[in-house]
Image (cartoon, rainbow, N blue to C red; front, side, top):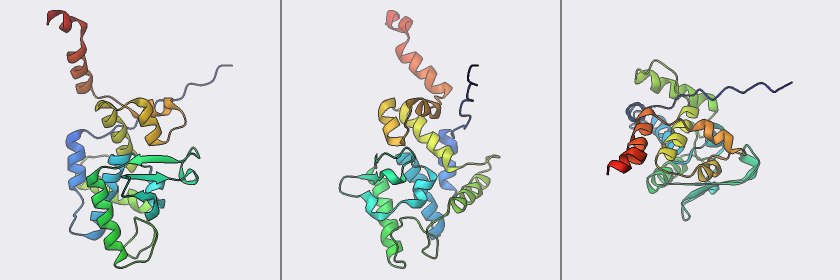
Length: 201
C-alpha cells in the first residue's frame, strides 16, 4: 500500500500591508502591548517558534555576536541553533530586559506584568486581539508570522539551506512548505529572468 500524501501547509502569511497594520495594533505606551510588539519583531527577525519565545532566557541572547544561541534541549529537532538578529531587534530586546530587571528577578526575557514566564495561550490571545483590532476577519497566530519570516526571507534571496538552519527544520521539505511565494513576486522574477525578455534586450 502506498502512503497517504500529506496535505500542504495551508497557513497564509500576511501581506506587507496587513503586516504593517498588525504591528501597529499594539499600544506601545502600555508595557504589555509593547512587549507583544517586541515578540512580533523577534518572530519576523529570527523565525522563532512560539514555545521558543516563551522559554527564551537572557543568557541565550548574545548581544556581542548579535544572535540567539538556542540549546539543543529547546529545539524541536534536538540540535543547537543560531538565529541571527538585526541591530533594531537587539535594541528592543536590550530595552525590554533592562526594564523588566528594574522590577523582576527572572532569567526569562518575556514575562507577564507580574514577572512570571509568558504562556503560549497568553500570547495567542493577545495576537487574536490585535487581529480583531486590525479588522482582518481571521485569526493571526505567531505561527503565521513565522510563515511571513520564511516567505519574506526567501523572496529577499536567502538560500533555502540557510533558511532551514535558522528555522530549525530537520528536513528541508518542511522549510519549503513554509515558503509561499506571492503572485506579485513570481511575476517580478519572471520579468527579470524571462528568456524572451533577454532576447529582446
